Length: 360
Image (tube, rainbow, N blue to C red; front, side, top):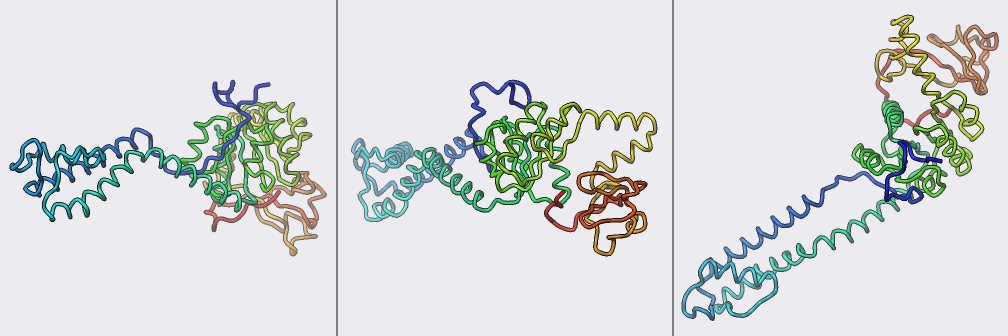
């Protein structure tokens, strides 16, 4: 069975292997080499100038009694910084020997560090990354895991961020390294790997997650991911998207709390816009959080319990009770109960801060 989001798995990539990718500002290898080469050349030029300014205090075995030429100064600076030290040119005055100690020796050390800088940087980067990942694992809890960084996944993330969820409270899981690189650039933590594998979801700390959003391109993959996620995290709320409505019951049986049929939803929205463009426009605004109207939900308050929803809440359009949606005309909505959630339409407004998302 194909477990990738966009067809076959990329050649050379093992989907069973996961790796945590933390957001950072990356510099390409070409840029690193160019930067080091420029700094090395600058150090060489500076050393040559220092030697040239004190050229009268040096002795050249090839031309004794004569001050060093600029080429000889460059030659001496090169063999000195590279620690070759042939000994054919040596400082003979106290001042120039002091200059070698105080200036050329520190420059030589920096030059050597540049020569082995790539190895040192790799070791340092690995240590730093390992420390950052350990620190992230020790702090992450109650986060949202989004599986799939495609069109649906990015749209879901946009809504989550507009609702006030911090980027640090979101973890992306995708099988494509390029998708994770894009997520990192957006400031999101990512895990590269096949989300149907337990190890990959464990790398996303799914046991501590509050919510899991499954937004992959294949229904069979979504079912496997939901099943694995439910086994690893019995208490997390799992929301999944499927293309075909006939797969919705299977996905619910696999552990999904909510299932969105993407093809049906898009088709119904197209039908509404065709029959009545105004209704279609309202639906688009309801889906676009922060623009015009927005659809929100909240628990029924103590003062509202026992009252009809029509009289208790202005703008209410439905009541959620024990997983069922009650319309305002439903007799059961004539009396709000403890635990009911009220769905209402209101004017869009900016979120007051970064609160946690309300649980379903």
